[in-house]
Length: 251
Image (cartoon, rainbow, N blue to C red; front, side, top):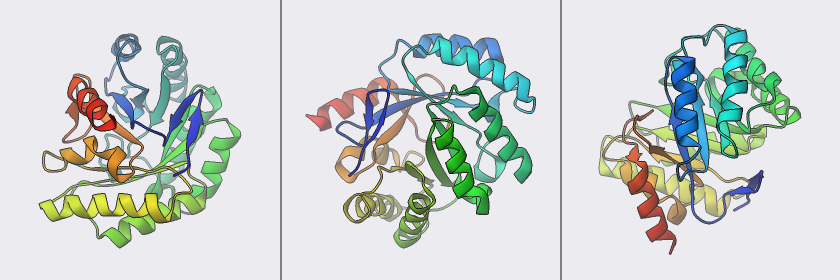
């Protein structure tokens, strides 16, 4: 599998990299969390802009992002606008979504930016190109909070993300059975074995899928989300347990 190197952090190589989500609403609390997270054992912090009370005000987003970048010190920063359509907090029209992505890119603060596969639509390749021009790597994401699509469909989506230029295709799905978890893991392994042009990020959500958040290195998922006190999605495992298990499996 190939590797994405961002400021010396080699995503796709060795132990899966750990992402810590910030899901606070007020700027002051966001920055408090950032200071706290800057000292924790994690590789990347995700700011969920859709939770931010000023998410619809471009100036407020840009100001908070600049302060967040300073507070995080050397931690990688992933900036995510999770739309309602993908299980997030913010209902946005297409132009509102793309304008907010460009507001984030214009700050030059994001190491990585999340671009949603379906909401981006036909604009996906251009948006990825804009992100790369701004110096940000792209996590292209697709979420299903109700079911797990078949393995072939999961692979199809991730390959389409690769073809559009994404650095890190991501799928997160909800299992209804143990077989669904295996379907997600099989899709992950197929990407790693047959489509290794990029690393991928995959997870099966909820308690049933928690194993997928811990076994990434074995199946080919390059990053995982951990709960440092407040989860941003169902089934996120606490940071201490994630680090303990990843260390044990890596050895």
